[in-house]
Each structure stands twice: as C-alpha cells, then as structure tokens.
Image 1 (cartoon, helix red, strand yellow):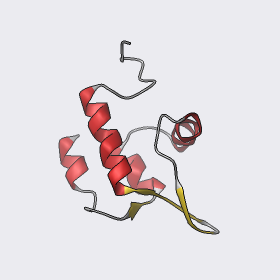
Image 2 (cartoon, rainbow, N blue to C red):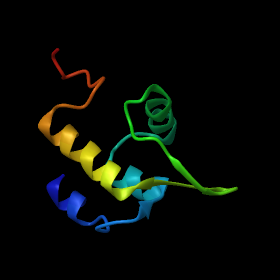
Image 3 (tube, rainbow, N blue to C red):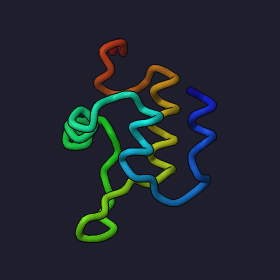
Image 4 (cartoon, rainbow, N blue to C red):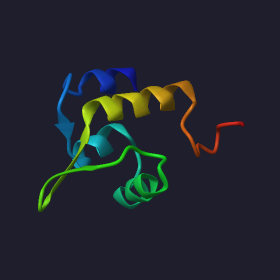
Length: 77
C-alpha cells in the first residue's frame, strides 16, 4: 500500500474513482464511511463535482497501514 500512497499528488484534490483504486472498498461503503466519520469529509467543488483533500486521504491511508483506522474490525480498543 505504501507505493499507492506515493502515486497521489502532493497537494490538491482527488476524486472518488482515484480513491477507490487505492482504498479497496465499494463506493457505497465509502459514502457510508464518510457519513459515519470513518472516512474524510468530501469537498464540493461544483454542483456535480465532489473531491477529497489529498492530505486527508494520505492521512487515512497511513492510519490504515498502522492499524489505527477508527471502526476497523481489526482495531482493538
């Protein structure tokens, strides 16, 4: 997964199809996670354009690699 993190741009925004290539969940699971706060909040860039801050996605992936993802079934409290 570390190689996939480096394929993201340094700064800016990424759209859902790019996120789903590196974070292996379905789009409905992703949106459920956004609503529950498990995944980062989306940013509306226009009427039909939604994206996420690259920094937020990098942080999420780093947490997943470290096993610190909130709501992860493998995470022990």
